[in-house]
Length: 314
Image (tube, rainbow, N blue to C red; front, side, top):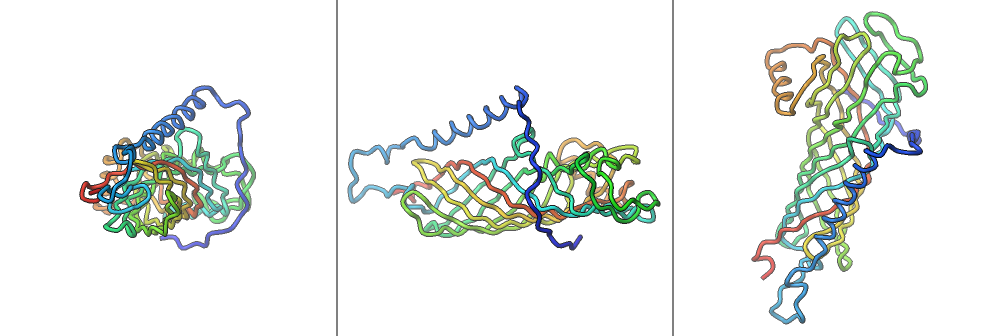
């Protein structure tokens, strides 16, 4: 596994279209409208909240008194990836490093940045667990500026600086930079319907690689398992009648090291089977291996739908 330091750097250059295309605008508006409708549905009162008066035997509001519950949610967001090195190795042929690539994210361009999660809070509502799937994106700037190059490519030394697009047709993980983590959660003291929480977790990276070196006959375009990932998070949950909206900060780390197979993949299970089969047979990928360490800040916002056991409301 690669062991490299994360490098601090300023924010990546913004590339903003003055007049976005109508289809992309419609996609974004439709997505935001759908999330708005789901949040509005979560805010609708249920029978307990519409009762004319509370009595001593009335159940406590699950909005203001978190307890044992399960939550399903989805979110959108925007990440920032620290610049990092990209490595490509093929035994006896290539040993290339491109230094300090300022990765782009384009979270609101198709495919969108998104995530889904399932949470389970235990009795008392203080501790919980969460299965979290994040679909982020990573693009290398192919034409913008020159970057430091080191090593060899196809048996020849590379120049000290060059544009990435001089050597690559594609260098990205856009369908996406996928992380699946299992997390532990801690709910902090609530302020009315505002419930702060924190968590930490670890899991696996399953990106969709799209890497095409100009000298390779075929691109690598498939889902892959590339290594472990981890995250830490802090958020604010605004608890409504039967659901919640939330805003959250996440810090994530993923160390990619994946095969360059020269294969156009298909479905995730099929791509995973192909990768497992090659590993089981001890086959080296025809175009070598490639990877990068991705360290990211992520700001997200979304909704949760709450499922409370009857025994927790009686």
